[in-house]
Structure formats: C-alpha cells, structure tokens
Image (cartoon, rainbow, N blue to C red):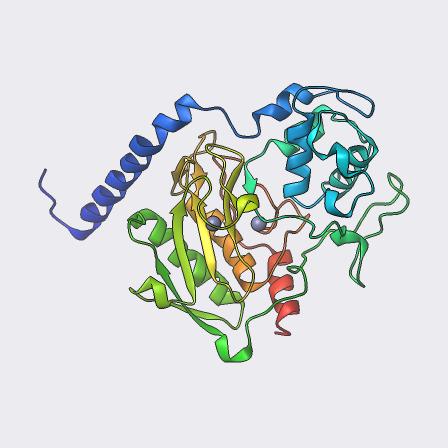
Length: 316
Ligand code: ZN
Ligand code: ZN
C-alpha cells in the first residue's frame, strides 16, 4: 500500500493499532465471561439467604470499601455464602452511594450497577462511608427519605502533590501501545487546561513522576489490587505522590469506541485515573469523569464536578 501523505500515514497506523488491540484481546474475551458475572446469579438475594456467590459478593463489597471484616464483630462469616446482617448493611450503603432504592436486597437495578466495568480504587476507605463524614459529607441517616447532594471526593486523608511538584513528568512501561500513549497524553492536556498542573512526557519511565502501563492479574500491587481478566476491574491508579497508573491488559481497549461496541475508551479511563493520581476520589455524579464505572462503547470528558473537585483540593 502506498502511503502518500501524513494524514493517511496516521490513519493507517491508527488502524493497525486498533487491529492489534482486537487481535490480542479478542481471544481472551471470547473465552472468559466478565469477572463480575457471578452477580447475575445473585439477583433477588436478600438477608437470610444462603446462595453460591454470596462469598464473592462479600469480597466485592470489601474490595470496593463497603465491608471491612477486620473491624467487624462477626469475622467468622467473611468467607461463607450466608447473606448476613453485615452484608445487608454493606449493600444498603452501596445503594445509597449509587442513588438506588435502599432495600438491602440484590434487586435488578443494584445487580446491573454492580456489574458495570469499574475502576479498582475503592469508593470508601477503611469502612468509613465517605459520604457520612466531614463537612462536605452526605447524610447516612434517613435512608430513603433524604436525597444526598452529589459531588466529588478526595482520596482518603486528602493527599496532594506539593506546590513544588505542579509540573509532573510521565512515562510509559515498555510495550505500551501507541494508541494508549496518545490517549493518555490527550488526557493530561485536558487536566492541565483546567488546573494549575502541567505535564510532560519523558522517555525514561523509571524516573518519571507518573509511570503508566498495562498489567494483568496479580501484578505486584498487592492481592486486593489484582486485576481480574475481562470485565470487572479495568484500571487503577494510586494516590499522590505514588504516581502509578495501570490499565488491565485483559480488557478490550479502543480509541473512541462506537456506541454499542464492547470496547472501553482508553482516553476516558485515562482522564479518570489521572484524577486519582492528582488526589481525587470517586464522585457519585454519574456524568463526572470520577464516577467509578464506565459502560463499554461510551466516552466522557471532564465535568463541572471534576473541575470543582481539583480546584477545591488545590485551592485554585
Ligand atoms: Zn477510580
Ligand atoms: Zn497495578
């Protein structure tokens, strides 16, 4: 094929990159169901039930910050299939946080929300409901009758980059596809345009302030931060000033996926994870980039809630 100008060279390499993603990732996708598939079988479950998969539900709610058996008076039940009081309470907190009917039951809306591909960062840290504490907190009392105010949060303890580090360098682990590099670079540009941060790419990723790469399964970030194959957890990033951002290599990634596609947008996820790198936690505003989950075949940009969040954190 003759490449006659820069524009077609770019399109051609983009096409090759997209084909690469499909070729590499389609195989595992076809063989394995979503890591959150177990939730489908739990629809209708409620307190008092005993069903296969409840144990996994407990692990799910623990991973994402809704259940902490280390602080529970009932530690024996952490690893069984009994839908007990502690689990019902965790489901209610989840439902409150996602503006669902607070029933404590696994109704279809709750299951559907829980099954969405999502970020691996917990919504709530150390068993403390993020919306129940602090002056910007939302009220956990009056379940069902109180409509909480939606907004951004910060990472636990409000970690920030010091003023001497408002210029950050970033680099990519060897083997990072070109399409991902482009998407991440554009996401940094978006955050720079609404904050006091500036970002620049450096080739030597080991000395960069922020290291970005693709990982799969248990990859050395601790068991609770393991990736889980296709679906389920799709990416994560660490609080300031750790500077680590990983995509799950087992997902179907794309640049600007078409509506209805099963591919997940690299740039949307990069915008989200950079929010964590800068110190933002999850927002319960569904339109915000810091909302915890993302539907395949969709793209998002920064939302007013994200902009208010980063400006509040850094007094900008
Ligand atoms: Zn997140
Ligand atoms: Zn990781």
